[in-house]
Length: 432
Ligand code: HSE
Image (cartoon, rainbow, N blue to C red; front, side, top):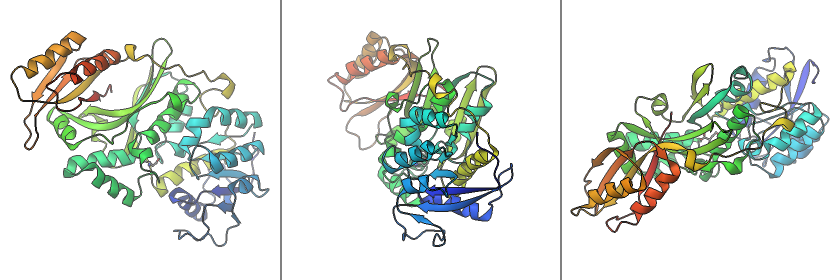
């Protein structure tokens, strides 16, 4: 247990957008914590000391090596804002925990990939390891699952966890713009990760939903088990056709528990009905549904990135450390976390949107519907929409709920039809 102190010396490693936001906040409001006492930055570390920053760091003790900052006698709380699942971030966090120091981090990759071992280390030393800022930035999803939902059993969690992808999809639809054009703008606005593949490939959202799955279901965070598909193959044509059918395409991250104790963790583009709250969460917003057996559905929405919001989440964790609040890092003590058991695709039911580009010849529609029927897929709606400039005719259909393994086989058979001009495009319809 940490004991009450009048002053907490905070070592901050990583001075990007969030780090600068935190330094600014702590200089303005050092006595912000409800338990009293103050938080003072006692040392900083980053890759470059001289890089221009919105906050003057010249008066703060500088550490070239974040591990040295974590180990310093002047550091009571170590804040890790470096990023990356391994390397200096992991080394510094381990150093702080081994020395019995509380750690606050915004590093989703670190927690999603090494959360179980770090939780075991933190708990063996009796110190908190907190990561509210790792998921949904300033919108409190972690505390919601770790603390507020413990009186219930979570059944499912689903939402929009990547602001960059949400911004890209929103702007593609609103302005009829290309994916590449809008991505460049998102990078200029500072939403995107240093490597935008992390965002558009779905990996950033997968890190976040892996963490939420561990909190919701008491399983060890297992990033390798996440099924991941990004937005990089979404075309404007699909955005438009989906809208004609009454849907909007979103990158949905979800986790759910099956009746036999399996847990699904997935990120993929999905069609949400236009009037659904997830479809209405536009721009860089994040949004999340949590479904509890007794509470029912909770919906939260807010900023998932940015200096002010994300630093506020880091500060809330620092306040928890100052208060002496302590609970297991995930939903259960590290030693009691269940191994992750994936859900079998044969048992995962869902509806789908399927877009085909076919030759405009007699019998082509009959061959598509016969192939689907033979594979066991039932069509819900069907739209044939000539598009100017296209070589063939786009056919769009939605299906009734079917096992994903059955759908995959149907798509394989459709892809083999001689009238197909390009591979079928399948997008799931969100189960929300
Ligand atoms: N690149 C992330 C996003 C930022 O776009 O949501 C916060 O994790």
